Length: 196
Image (cartoon, rainbow, N blue to C red; front, top):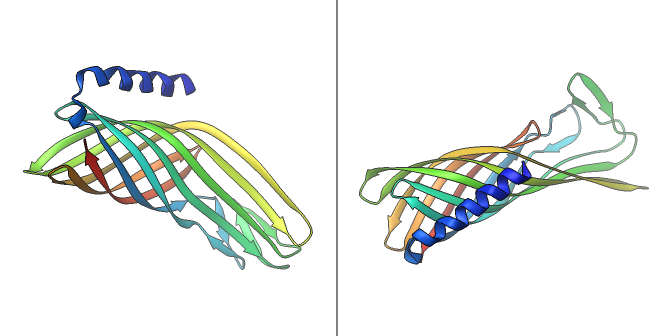
């Protein structure tokens, strides 16, 4: 999968030769994320929602197709409790034996093909499909110990949204779903892009 991401990145860079510099764009999105942890809360405190951001560069390949390369920070999901609090993972029930907190955070670098459809002058509907290389960090801390574990992988993501053009500036709103080895991150975005 890493080779696929590398090939898509090289393809995107080769496309720069035929793209006018004023057609390229950069952007930033605010992300409102829900991170699927697989945990069902019983009496502990579970927070699977957090904010994040996405920084991206867009390279038009044609009038209706762009390639976007992005860096995404999805924020953090957490579970905390005191002795006696319970939670479930699948059909198994677990209980805290001390005050503790567990947290998972994730970032990724993605490459996507973005198809566009003009609805009206300056208003575009878009859909995107891509792959992303993700990194996640899992940490546990309690009153007497702490530990952490890192994981990474490559998976697909897809999304759709609406863009409104205002000269060299565009506003956009959308939704994307990122797969992380079978766990999902649902992400709603709002942001701006600037055309060179």
